[in-house]
Image (tube, rainbow, N blue to C red; front, top):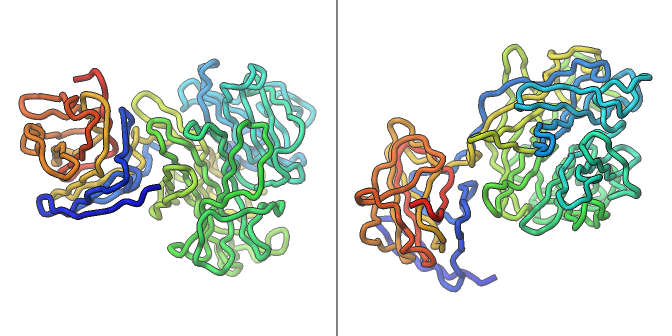
Amino acid sequence: MFERALVGIFLFGLMVSVSGAESPRNLGTDRHVFIDRRMVDVLSNAELTVNPPDREELVLIADKPWESGGITSYGNVLWDPEAKEYKLYYVPVSWDAEPGYCTALATSKDGIHWEKPNLGQVEWNGSKENNIVVWAQREGTVAIDPSAPPEQRFALVSSAPEAGTQLFTSPDGIDFTLQEGQLSPHQSDSQISTFWDDRIGKWAHYFKVYEGEDGWHTDSKVEVSKSIPYPQEEPLGRSVARVVTEKLSDPWKEPFLCVMSRDSRDPERMDLYTNAAIKYDRAPETYLAFPTPYYHYNEPESRAYLNEPTLAIGGKRNDGVIETQLAVSRDGIDWTRYRTHYIPLHRYEDLELKVLHVYPGIVREGDELVQYFAGYTFTHGDTQVRYKNLGRKLGGVFRVVQRLDGFVSVDFDYEGGIVITDPFIFEGDTLTLNVNTSAAGEGRVEILKEDGSQNRGYTLEDCRIINGDYLDKVVTWGEGNSDVSKFAGKEIRLKFEFRGSKLYSFQFKKGEK
């Protein structure tokens, strides 16, 4: 990669960099989302802010005999275009059978009202009248593989104790068949997030690993390497590793790459549990993950909190609280993890939620994005969950709504702020913004030359004031001119001057002037 030579110039009192040998980024007509500092040269009186989802609803609870111990932290959601329905795969626990867990399916037409269909696939306590799709599997993700033959269109990548990581396939997402061989001898003891990465043309898998005294490993002691150095000398506890494969059936090659872990900004008693990593399909080179910081109680704290003097099974307490953060990446390897919460510990109606895990999978519904998370009223090591049939009192699966591109925004101060981009090249003839100025906010956009100088007719003074909440606001200058085609193929910068506003993304489009 070329080294970038930077020369500073002052533009209206702000220092902007002038690029040297490095070629400008070519956006084409791709959307740019402000998840990090990429393409941001100047950030003045503005900051990147994580935006939690809203409109929370409890949509699934444990109400079947094979769910007597509740619904666990692992599952995922997808839209099945052939069946025209949502499929939610989740892991219930039963204290009436061994090993007591399975992968089950709920379906929905609207993502709010869910059914647990009798599938007739797996026998439980002498009957197949249940919604179980795979027995004794608890840590997987179901994905649709468009390149697979029809009988293998659905794939479940999952791990279980003693079984390692395995591949199951299905024509319909209901009737799953175990494929021969192991993908890996490891068992992650946690959710595996699997998705197709179209940027590299491979399947990506993210899963939990540990750093112990004998190095990085999974629960089955598989060797793992680190992608970046960490300053701590002590073990880092639960962390996130990544492996990629050409096909879902390809064995996982070792050593795996550790891509996310606790660092010097985190408390020593915290580590990262699940990750729910995905590739965001509305913008290239955009990856999102929802890591779960697990704060560990020591034994006296755990006993006091639970009012339970005995130790957990195994002789030590593995107890604490878990919530969800947001991590972002441009390549799926190097991640920026925001330390503010994405979904915090909180109260929902009469339920005090103490453990929160986002399920992999984001579904678009009209102009909104929908996510699901598991939320529980007990801490990680609370043995009281062994009491049967608590149903809603245990929590369940929740639905939340996020704005399109809304995970992170540039938030401008109420009295005004400025963002100036790095130089880039685009295609198209109109500039559109995803922005919310609020009632009292406003903003303008300026198209600058690569060196930061102005273009006549496209200055801040020429720009029509933007005020309101828009997903696709066309920017205009002068007497309503939106045509920016004269700048296509040339190096430009954008200058955003807003006050009291949230800017989420921008995009140049063709044929909309």
